[in-house]
Length: 271
Image 1 (tube, helix red, strand yellow):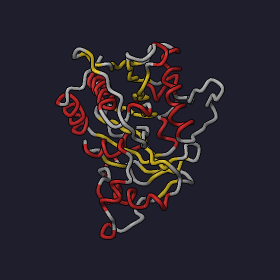
Image 2 (cartoon, helix red, strand yellow):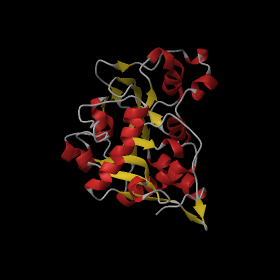
Image 3 (tube, helix red, strand yellow):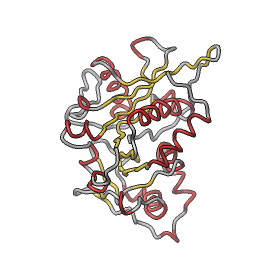
Image 4 (cartoon, one colour):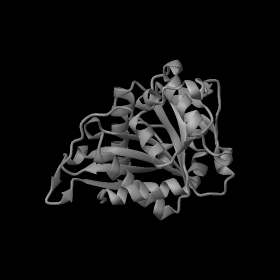
């Protein structure tokens, strides 16, 4: 589901009751490049990530899945026309994943429980916000666009990797253990981390956890999903290219309904 682990004051402008924000799904190579530029700012420049298809000269964070995916973008229409994209999600349905050869998450997790569930799936990835728009309503507007996409496509389960910054697993023992003990997905949907860098998240006994400190150590995006009822797969994955430790978050239909309700009750505007 991507990662936006940092927070800073939110830039908000409301004019005459009309929001500065709108969301749209990318419709052109120019739109996709704008999403990739924001991803470069966050994942490469800010967080130190890299990858074989990252274009440092053009400042684009891209990979082989981008041509097959949908790209949901949050635009701030008070900015200059070439610099309006301030939030993104990459979206992959099962049909898109078939064309791409697999879901992105299958590099890190065995997704057979989800694939065999018979439910309509949507993978969320590369989620990020511009540094000036974190910590408030910007994410609500992006989630509002996501809720519309989910409703329009009849999605029943959303999933994707979300990240802790850094690759020191020992430093993350508290929050990873808390996720394992209190938020594990049901057996029928519990995907499993795979590969040589897969980690057992049961690093601390439940009765020895400092729960408050563990929650504080979680990125805001992960905490937001947990409040909606998200659960996590079995194990974490150390991604050295992106300098992160990833967990797989899963939101079932009830959590998707909670997402939609939380957005509409808070009045997030959509365009």
